[in-house]
Structures are given as structure tokens and as C-alpha cells.
Length: 356
Length: 282
Ligand SMILES: Nc1ncnc2c1ncn2[C@@H]1O[C@H](COP(=O)(O)OP(=O)(O)OP(=O)(O)O)[C@@H](O)[C@H]1O
Ligand SMILES: [Mg+2]
Image (cartoon, rainbow over all chains, first blue to last red; front, top):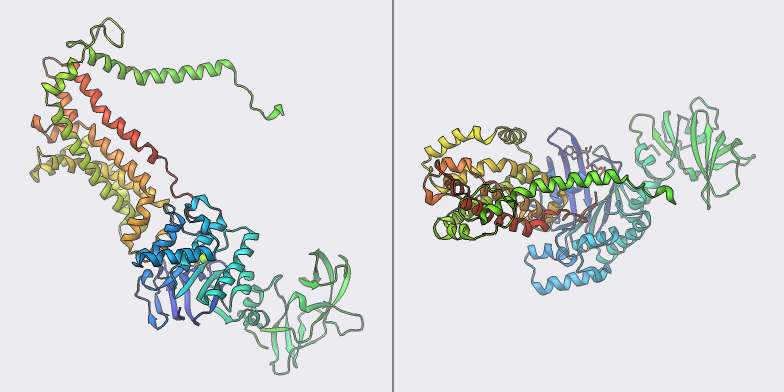
């Protein structure tokens, strides 16, 4: 096992497309890091550079203390699990798992021992003689995991390993991967665009957008202190509500709409800003309360354990998460308050850096 | 219930369809049976007034003569040698270059693909003269090497395209997995890609073999010694300006087709592709 370090990593594809821009990430030995971001943001490209399947245009890549830029994929001591499993169709499960060890001339007895151990760990012992086409998607992905495990690699790389599975299986395999990490304590780099996977699996998340890292932090920090507007709306479902307005004397006021000032901290300079409030931090106000703003309920979504109210404020729709299922009817006018200390303030410019 | 059972088609239509199919079966089988009949007739009768498949005086004399009086075995050996050489060379070259065209981006890739295809647009007869001149310059006239060179050159374009098309259906992630498992690019090709391309290799091999096995025109230009003749040339030699030995001709024709039939039967299961099924999910 080893650390993985990315230093000023860039990838410019031959057609001139700059897919990964100056990425710096230090992944500690044994850490589970999730690369997450919207489609096309360069997650796979970054992972494939670590694997050696794409050549970095510039920058350094270190696994342990070795600079691996010029090493073949097979020399980097990494294992990778692909979205499409990529099992060798002409080999049995056992042969698939043995292949990497055979290529490395591991002694036969040890190969058998490792394969049996991994098969046991993944409960696929009964599948060892099957071929890939004789298995279900979940079983295939398990075998792909097994093929990685037997190698005892310095780091595991995953590129959206669960996105071809149905919803139920995905949850199950997610738990399994988490368990695997706890058990193996191996360095893992995991690519996904699924924020639930990211939040539940990662020790830390690396959020990317258009090839640029937006934030590197543990999941809860990303959730509670998103570094900018993009991260704020990307993580969390339903997405964080954003209000445009301005700060004056440490309080935020909406633009163009009557509202009570929301205190955001006296250290913030005056000027335009964007206020972010998560749906669960926007509460239906009591009459005697200092309310933020009023709006009209458009739609009520009942999810069983909670309700999502879509409330129109001026021309904007915001979402309120309410534990009470009968709190409001469509058409009702409601007052909304902001839970104290749970506001996010972002700069009013294009990037929307976090201010508080 | 009745609404979704397909309507039975009118009897006349069924009858017509079967009649048409039977007619085509007859058209393709009749000549073969005719050749069989001729090969069994004593002497040199091409036409007779009878229509029997086995003439009453049927004899294997023509077959016997082929092996005893004519250098038929020699020609068979020559043909096998030439066709096998063409197959091995063709498959080896096509499997490698098809892979390069499928996987690598290099300068001139597109141009080369198109120019390879262009050579297929000219009839082989047109290339006969320039290719012959080349072989003559190389001093390879009247040699098997010259003939094999000729055949490989004409069969290769199709084979390369065929193999490229086959590799295109094999997901790149398989080679990538192999590279991560410790394979060099060459190992990933031979250990993972090539076994999966087996059906493509078989088709390419069959095509190369057959194109050489039954070829006459080019062989007639390159080979001059009767000793070096391949089967099609040997067959033609039964046809002299004076007379044609139809019995020998027919018997030899039938024997020539046997190896091809056997090849097809042996390889037919490889022709059913779908080997990559289930390895990946796109
Ligand atoms: N071989 C290539 N040549 C040119 N551009 C490429 C190539 N591969 C990827 N790209 C581009 O680079 C960008 C990043 O691609 P990448 O596959 O890393 O995205 P991703 O974050 O993994 O997205 P997804 O979630 O859809 O898998 C995309 O805009 C893509 O179009
Ligand atoms: Mg991707």
C-alpha cells in the first residue's frame, strides 16, 4: 500500500482539449478518496493518468515514493475496476483472477491461495469455474473486484464501478466496497458522479468541474462548508437554494424582493452576494417569528417520512424540506425563516467563492 | 386470443415460395450432379442422350487415371503448399495490421485505409500486368514464392479490413485491464485480443485459402512448368486445343472441392461469433 500524489497534473488531448488542469491531490496511504463531479469534468482522465492508461501532458505522479510518470501501467502496482467490468471473456473466473499474478510470475501455490482467499471474501467461490457471460452483472463486478484484490496492489482505482448495476444492487455493492476498504485498509481512488456514493464511501472528496479541482475535503465538510457556489449546488439533494442579493452592515437582503435582513456576520464586506440555504435549513416560520421572506406554495411532494415544498418567491422557486407532512397545501402563502447559523454566503461574481 | 396468432398465409403463396426455393436448389445442385455423372462415364462423353446420374456402365477409371497416369497428387500438393503459405502469411499480416488500424492513431492512417480499399476497386486482371512485371524483376517467375506473393498482395486488403472491423468490436477496456495486469502491449494483443478475434481469424483464413485454392488466371501467368502447376492449372491442362478429357476434368474438379468442403465443416463453429458477449457492459 502506498500514498498517491498528483502534482500540477495536466492533460491536453491531441485535439487540443484541456481536460485536466493543474490538479494537485495528496492521497494518504490507506485513504479512500472519491473524485466526483459532473459528466465530462475530467474524473476518468485523472484516474486513467494514475493508472498509466493516459499520459499526463505535464506534472508529476507519485505512487509511494516513486515517480511513476514513465512507468508502464503494469509496473505501477495498481489495480483497476472498470465500469464495464472488463473481464476477459475467454477465461473462467479463476483464470481472470489469476491472470495478473501469472503475468508477474507469482508462484503457483501462492496464486491459488490468494485467489481462494479473495473468492471467499467476495462469496464467489461457487463461480470460479464460470465464464463471464454465465454471470449476472453483480456477480461480474464482484469478480472484477476479486481480480483487483488478489494483486495486493499499492492502490485500487475504480471508475464508476457501480453505474451499470440496478439501484438495489448498487446499494449492496456500495456497502461491500466500504467493507472491503475497512478490511484491507488499502489506498483507494474512486470515480463517480453519484453524490450518494461519494458521500458514503469517501474519507475525502475531490470535487472537479471542467478539469479544475473545486474543493478537497471530507464529505461532511463539503456538505456544510462548500468552497463555492458550484460545490454547494452539486452536493446535496434537493440542491441548495441560492438567493441573489447584497450584504449591508453584516446582514443579507434579497434583491428586488421584500425580505427581512439575515445576519451573516459583521466581518463580511458590503456588496453583492449570494445566500445559500439548504432545503432542510429553510423552515416554515411561526407568526411571531422574525421571518426571512414569504412565498406561495406551488407543489407539495410527499416522500413518506418528509415533505418537499416548492415555494415561489418572486420569480424564483425554492425547495423547503419539512418533517411535517401536512404543513402546507398548494396555493397557501407561507412565511419562511432561515435556521440560525446555517447560511452559506458566496461572492456575487461568476465563481461565487465562499465568504463565510 | 385469435387476434394475435399470425394469420396463415394463403396456400398459393406458400407453394410459390417453396417452388422458387426448390428451383434455386436445383440450379445450384444440378451442375454438381452433372459433373459427378460425367466423371463416372467411361471414355470422354460430355453429353449423352440419357439423364441418369449413375450411367449403367459407370466406372472409376477417370479417378484411377488421375492418380496413376496424371500428376494429380503433385498438383494437389502444390496447391496445398501455395494455399497454406498464402493463408499463414495473409492471416499473420492481416491480424497485425488490422489491429494497428483499429487501435492506433498515426499519421496517414486514414489515407492508408482508403488506399487499401481502393486497390479492391480494380479487377485483378488489371493488376496482372504490373504485378507480373514486379515479380519478373524479382526473378520470381515460375516459382511458388512469386505466386504466393501475388496472392497475398491481392487478398490482403480485404483481410486487413475484415480484421480491423473485428477488432473494432472488442472493447478497449479489455486491453487496458490486461496492461494493468502486467501485459506489454504485445502480450495484451496476443493473450487477450487475439483469442477473442478467433472468429475473425477463421474467416480471414478461409478467405485467403479459398482465394488461392481456386485461382487460375494469376497462376497461369506465374507458373510455366507442368510440375509446378496448381490444381486449377492442372485441370485446365486436360483441355488441349484438340480435345478435352472430360472424364479426367470432371473427376479432378470434384476432388478439388473436397478439401474446401472439409475446411468449411471443421471451421463452421468458429464462424458463429459472439465470443466477446458478456465480458463487458457498455
Ligand atoms: N481521447 C480523447 N480525446 C479528446 N477529448 C477527450 C478524450 N477523452 C476524453 N475527452 C474529453 O475530456 C473531458 C473529460 O473526459 P473524462 O472522460 O475524464 O470525463 P468524466 O469526468 O470521466 O465524465 P463521465 O462522468 O461522463 O465519465 C470530456 O470533455 C471529454 O470529452
Ligand atoms: Mg468517466
